[in-house]
Image (cartoon, rainbow, N blue to C red; front, top):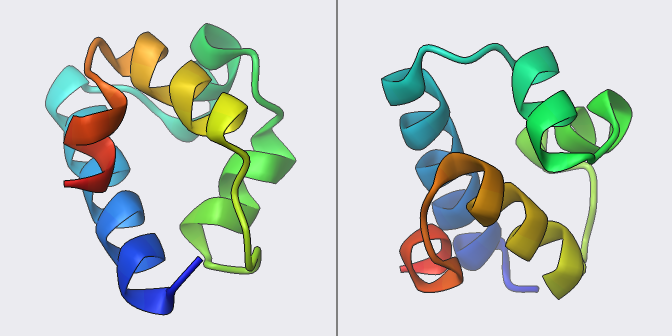
Length: 70
């Protein structure tokens, strides 16, 4: 994934997570994505994020994949 896209995804995840008042741990539990994986995404330590991971995060946050990447 391009760095600009990852930046946008991280920004949107953080915005939606904070709007809900959720911690990263809470998002991890709701999305069934490990805390470690979420942290790596947030810190941009992954070069490629699986679509299935993004769909799980979007579902937990109550938004669409388009909203995360848009």
